[in-house]
Length: 204
Image 1 (cartoon, rainbow, N blue to C red):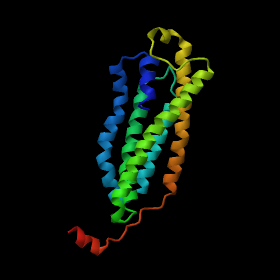
Image 2 (cartoon, helix red, strand yellow):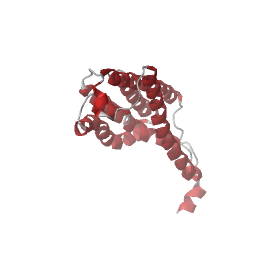
Image 3 (cartoon, rainbow, N blue to C red):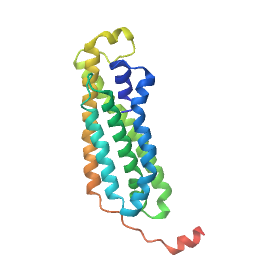
Image 4 (cartoon, rainbow, N blue to C red):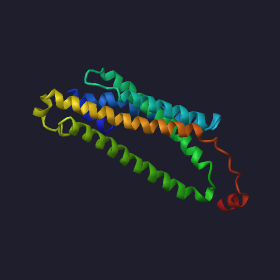
């Protein structure tokens, strides 16, 4: 989302960078608003329901992104961005709690490092795969994936090919989001690991 949509808004829809940023802003605002509450909700009702709700919101946003065209109302993008930020903020804290609550305290450091590794790797893959899909679709339509030259943007076919590639890229991402949502639903509720009194005394 944060990689493909700015090109669409600026080069495809002809917005200024400042205006494009405003339409992307609801994602960050939603994450800031809902992030602090998701952890508290998970503490009260458990981690599975908030994780599933958050993933469902993020998946719905990905579906909306996959339907965007050159004629789409920019407010639709803002709505999808807000849904994405809301879903991710609701999902992240319960998911982290579920993972950390299911392991022995002695492994916290290793698991925390592994979680950071997987998230960073996911960010990289989440950009690489959709970009490859976009470039492939545009190439098949006879266009080079280059929106940097203003004179090229006069060509409606170039912008249309970009939108087509972007739709396919979001469809691929949607598939993985659906898989993640199903896996989230299948994960059992977090069990409470008994605290070892010896470890407690050593910590003190």
